Length: 262
Image 1 (spheres, rainbow, N blue to C red):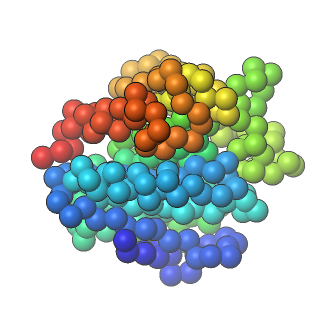
Image 2 (image 1 turned 90 degrees about the horizontal axis):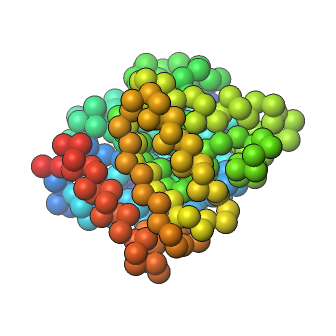
Image 3 (image 1 turned 180 degrees about the horizontal axis):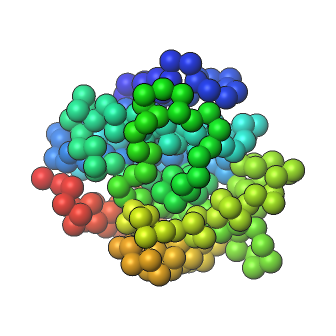
């Protein structure tokens, strides 16, 4: 693993300099790559949803990058700023890594899934952007991979994961939540997506995934979704639930079907 610095002088507040962790595949069979945002409710980052996924992607011949984006007490827009910068950095340096700049996917679990979906759907400018040449590159990914994602904003439906929005925005800015609800932001230009969730997830309601997939369908955007019956929230590669663990192989098939594997 190699640590890459996203900025010479990172904008915004931070205690640790924002970086990107690069995991090159030893036996590369794809010129595509995945930028990964671990979950953690915007309060911490779960390693098994970062390094764990990167090592799996390496095993199928893909390079991977893990973005340890800023979390609480850092608030929006800093997590999205880091995520956009990560995609831009990989795109600008694609030739160096032997990557096709038009085959960059983002991947996230839980709150990291919310962030991956935001990178894919939120198109408004945010603070601290346009600081250098790298920021001129397109931050929008070419594909989106969502694992039991937080999607819908808090409302009277009871679907939302309230904590993720609370720690992303802070108590005083919850009125902004609908503007950061990816299911409401899907456009005709949103990238295709792969989603998986478990029906018995008691932390992030499976309806979050249905809502995002429904929005994609309304806009005619290709989507593959798998809902497995069993498994708690935060399973990652799900080694303890063999039936649900099929999702990783299905993801490989989806990547191959897009033409990203040699």
